Length: 104
Image 1 (cartoon, helix red, strand yellow):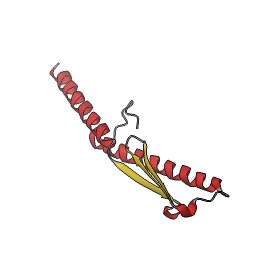
Image 2 (tube, helix red, strand yellow):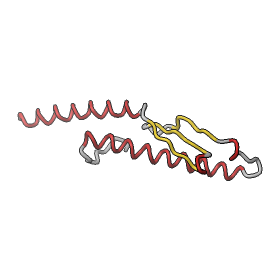
Image 3 (cartoon, one colour):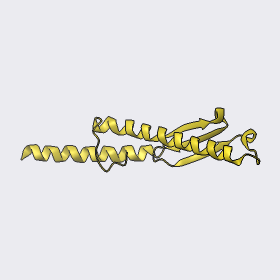
Image 4 (cartoon, one colour):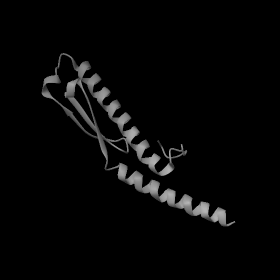
């Protein structure tokens, strides 16, 4: 029974560490850009878009679709980078184990 108790202590410790990492991920950010830096997006580790910057030169009322495509591509790349960052942070605790329910 002592082994079970030790396992439960380790599980609780890991759960606390995961909670701390998830809180930290809210403050960590990644940046993605498209169009040679004309559209820049910052995404945090909780996959929320923090900011979007669009250079004036890329704003063309005659070609709104291009701007929409650039924004979508930058957001998608930002989310991908944030997912990668979050996975790397969680792997530090889980040792690379895929633990269900972590949302990563």
